[in-house]
Length: 278
Image (tube, rainbow, N blue to C red; front, side):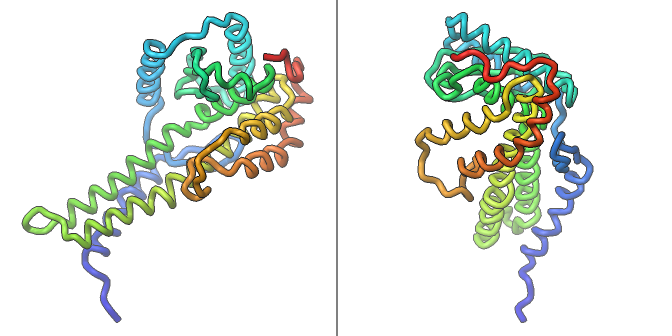
């Protein structure tokens, strides 16, 4: 039997440092109970988010559509209050509506929300917009941004540590070691970062549907929204290389969680159904 090359055993000895960091930085995702690895503080994330938010405000064209702005503000107010009542995020909510034909919206850590006017044709109505906002708010409440950043920092740390330990006397890496480290980096991306990215999307779908219902909007709207969003043309990328789950899987998962989220809607103090058309 061939003995294991020294550089392989040395590389794996560098990984317990990362594992120790992961154990000491565990948190729990609301409503799913999943343990997550997050070693980046909320203060650090919020500081980065504020810089991005301000940069968007200085570079992107603000929408002058007063009606859309009022609806976005109303939706964010209801969804954010629903999230706070369930999970209590200490966020300073703020909104920017951007006049750009991009079917997108996002919520930065700390509650900084950006909505592009290009999402309107897909949202169709107030509840559809609320489903988009609730999904993005769920990402922020679940600290998905911090988790993704933590994963990348930990993986980079393991690879860097392995590289430093394995350098030869001349300070250079053996070509075989370089190939192994490169493979570890690629394997980590495909085996850890991308699957977690897809998991985050499904978590945000489920948590967002809860916030949507708690805010008084028909939770079935989320199913219709993501069915419409699936019609957006995307490059033909295999699911295992994609940052997002397959559209069919998202819609099916939302259908499965509808009985649970319907209870939040039934118990809502005010019901808006699908709201006004956009």
